[in-house]
Length: 255
Image (tube, rainbow, N blue to C red; front, side):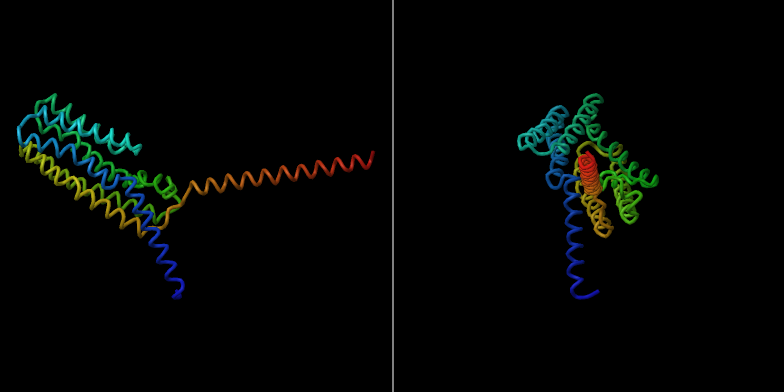
């Protein structure tokens, strides 16, 4: 490697890291997505800690979730993270209202976390790590990493293992508390465990992918193939036109 080659390689590595950061930010919602995830639960546990009123706590959590969606719509921004928050809060409210147990407000989210942890692990064992299915379209590589980019598939497998084990560790803390702790204790622990495990999993994903081979842009490949096909058809049409013109010239000379 020469001294002239190294800056180019460093720049390429920096570009790859920047692309990875941008993709993770888009996929997981960034700071705003985290706020939308935490705020309804924080409001629920705060109100319940103060007045022990399940109905007002649930109504407030659902109302702020809907407000976040309205704000997103007003700003013409993507609403997938806000909508997922609304559905999560709505399920929690339904569970809590049906059972009359305020702790059940958290149960759907806890079950979802457990299911997601299992999904990360099972899909990785099956050779199709879930994080690759999530991020593949974001990186414009779709499923090309499965058969054409083994280094990237390995990175996705590592990241999926990280997500699965981190979420399982989170469940190992929360589910015993669901049985032993009161609603306020469970709620505050759950709020405390919202962001740190998530950030750890995102950071590990970034570490693994930043060191992985670059994604194969299948969309660019498809566009290149379409352009090549159009050019081939144009050349074939021009060749046929020349042949037709030459044939017409012969007929005129013979006549």
